Length: 83
Image 1: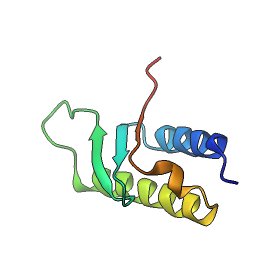
Image 2: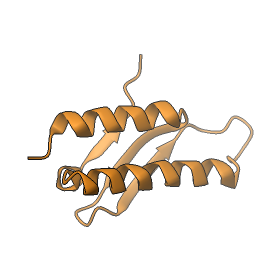
Image 3: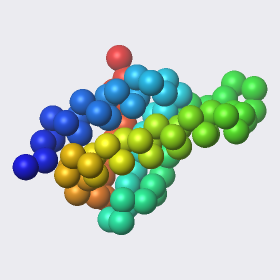
Image 4: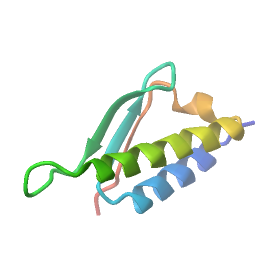
């Protein structure tokens, strides 16, 4: 049985590895519906930032699919907890 604690742990790790990532929303097909990153103080982030965000989210989904927990992502939004 997939565990919500696995999702929680893995999402926290993704936010820790990509400090600019603020939130991510998955649609019912597990496709990204929305990704929010911190505003860039000087305009737009470089393409490398978006590549890193995409790679982290792709790894997250792949890992959770492998663990049988990807169903718990459908239609959900995950946001960074502000301290």
